[in-house]
Amino acid sequence: MGLTHRELTPAFEHLGMPPVPDDAGSKRERIELSVGQVSDAELQQVTRRILEQSPVHVSPSIRYQLEDLLWKENAPPEIPKKARRERARALDLSELVQHHDRFLRLLDRFWIAADSGLSFKELEGLLLNGTRPVTLRDRIERYVFRNPGDWSTEDLFDNLGVFEAGDARLARFLEGLVSADVLLDERLQEKTVGTINGHLRAAGVELRMTGNDGGYPVFTVVSTRLHGNRRPKNIIFASFTKPDIRFQSSVDNDIEIVGGNPDDTLVYDREIPIEGLRWRDLHAWWQDVRETSSETEARGDLYQRLLKSLPDNSEGQKNLFIAYHQILGPSPGDPALLPEVWLHWDHRTVHERGPEALLRSRMDFLLLLPHGQRVVLEVDGSQTYTRDRGRTPDTAKYAEMVAADRDLKLRGYEVFRFGHDELKLFADAEALLRQFLPDMFRRLRVSS
Image (cartoon, rainbow, N blue to C red):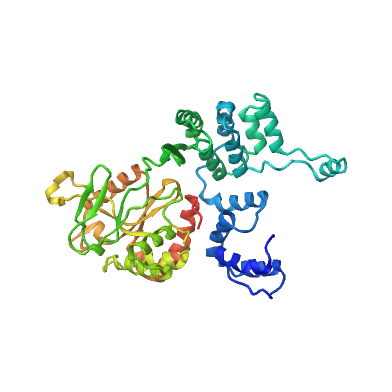
């Protein structure tokens, strides 16, 4: 593997793997012992470190397999083979390959271009004759660059394996294909995106501009089934009272909380990754907010702060929050569960605003999942459909709740409701969530 016994120890530390003494066996045995001690919750993160920052060389074929496993459950909606081929036929290969080295680096990143594709016997025959096997990269050099026109985009994609690749790999490849790392002309970027989207939208996805890189647009594959799924600018959550908000800059949508205790309301104002908001993102933010060097201390402190924000009169909400943590760990890579999130905010009261008042100011819980998916979890007590402290059914209140749900769904949120009695006892809440969470994450293609 290229490392000495002495070098293995710092390599374990660098990758976040448990240390194993130098005299514990061969290098292979020490690695197996260390891997065997990595918890299931940390295994994905360790694998990512190995692929992204490892001192250990990983062969292209192994890298390909590991990436597909890591990316599989966070893939965008399925992109059918027909849409893939139609898109390839519509793309002008000469426009994509104007910058030779940049294009080849993209292919090396996502495909196994160094493979000859020959059987063992064919390779053996070539070696006996003193001939080097012709690799896919060699064929690309010949048919794409030295003899332009010999291969079409469809021919190239067919040889790369684009039509059979997983949706997550394809999405990342398309994002790279239209990036400024490959296309150095913004107009060509936009033209290529338009061509690709013409064939992707029928599958429920598109390339959408989500940022910029040194003045060039950055495009990300997102689901078109989620209405207006922009990345959130500010998340106001876990507040003890209605916050007093003002804009520092209405142009940039920069807000601040004024008056009262600044710790009474939390505002997450960092960019939400395409993978969604994970615990690792929230923990890193909280560690900076609290200015603490201890990640463990920050995690524990944040958990207590979020738990404290839940209503004292809703055991169901508390049980849901606690059970979510106990069931998932939580692993740093799991979706963060945000309590008491402000959806609408109006400086006027409902009485002052009248019939145009916004419905449902806060959500009980919010999950920001991959590809812009937003999930709301609501715990309904009797106050949501009765008046007089639960003594009298109130059809008007129920109608307001249903109307607010419709509004959320039309805006791209998934809404799941729980009756308070389902969660009143912790054992019942835990049993329910052990079944519900895997089913929900599977449906929304979230790795957990």
